[in-house]
Length: 167
Image 1 (tube, rainbow, N blue to C red):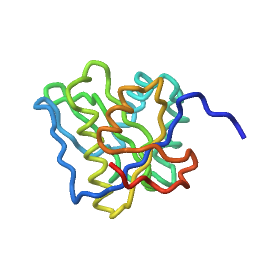
Image 2: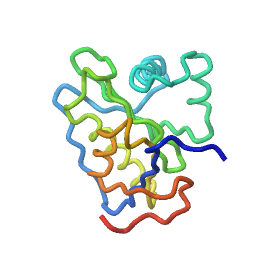
Image 3: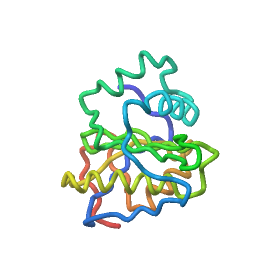
């Protein structure tokens, strides 16, 4: 059994509301992720996380060919004036948020929250009971703050612990 880095946590949100209401900054629009966005989203993940597979030809089939990939669960934040993608949320069909990433140039505008709420709506539409993600409290403190503000709570790393009903 490998040891996790200090601060690694699994967070869960029990979906209790009929719909979430994301507020999009005026210069952005949300749209579903399309295969034509692959290079741009790959680069965002490299830029934001730094540990993403750098070889696009290896990365692409690992993402778009994964059995849990469902295009209905993945969204991008497109900057209206330029058409550039500045953020994304990538989710798996197992009710799991794989990645939430916003480029530094677009941060502090509410994009991360809007992307996350949009993804949560997709899970609500599927009648998912809950949504999980994994992150690190130390390396991603701002993200953890966002997730907890949305009601996410820590559960066991393996996900077997029942979700908290507090919140």
